Length: 304
Length: 174
Image (cartoon, rainbow over all chains, first blue to last red):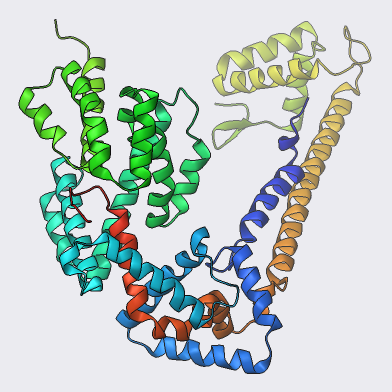
């Protein structure tokens, strides 16, 4: 019997259908089609006066220097994320008053995130504190062999906004790598493959938010979260401390279990002590590397 | 001295010589005539090669029905040649038909592509500037707020980053 694809007419038609399907995406706007459709409907529902305002704004935006446009775009990103957060939902008519109220709450939050002595210059201290953390993050990646020293130095030379953008992108990829490791050994079925695909499409700060929940379930992301096997009561305490962002308490709960794990791996005492002194996020990455190296060594065939 | 002309690589036989060779193959020659052809073949390697080719063709033709296999009629060769010509014409007609089918399908595809390309998409009626405006509608709608709250929004972005790098340092915040 002839296969249907052997009939020239049908074969050509099949190719044509594929070509037409591909063609349908030509010229589709950058914004995803659904969102673009929403915007388009709104645009069509506007009167000429409203459209004229938007045309003027567009021309003003276009006339800005590139760096200024980048700033406006970055602030728009912050505003949009602010609107997306459930706890920060603005009314539909996001008025200046509503936004002022919301941003006031963020400033109050910022005051709780910085050291007491610097609370007179909240914005300056938040910025300085962020840079300290980013610097520590990059140094830790150099130690883990994830980036080299030259890359770290080049990033630290960037203007503040670019430094944040680049380091957040790195943070996203590190967190996703840890989460992938969680998925690989997920006997409990808590992890979800769909999550991974979704995470890759999100902005870095949204990835951090999403994975905060996953961390709370296991205490640590990655393989360490599985092998530490915390007793339930300890796990609950770790989750609560993570929820409150009390990282010192988290470390206090985790250290005895981490010590036990590292000793069982036969590591030198000095390495164990140094590892136990690491801050939470760095400990998470260090344990992942140690466990992976150990697993690879175990898989390697014996030379004897 | 060959008994026939030679053009290119193969011999060219007269009509009479060809008839004689076919009769030889068809076993319709008298013993004398057959001896003559044998002598002719012994002298000429090209002719032997030609005979082999004819013989292979003859064997293939053997698959076609013949009036009497033991002694084919005089019209057998003509019939088979005509039949071969007819089959060749049918084969060529089939190939032409297939080629026409492919061409028709290709034309259909092109027409479909052109129709779809010219289909007015919702955004196709927008000017390039309007497309940009629709694309960035949310930003433009908030354009004044974005400038009014520059410092606060910068702080919000920094707070997000600060929280994203929590746990990187053992800082005592409170």
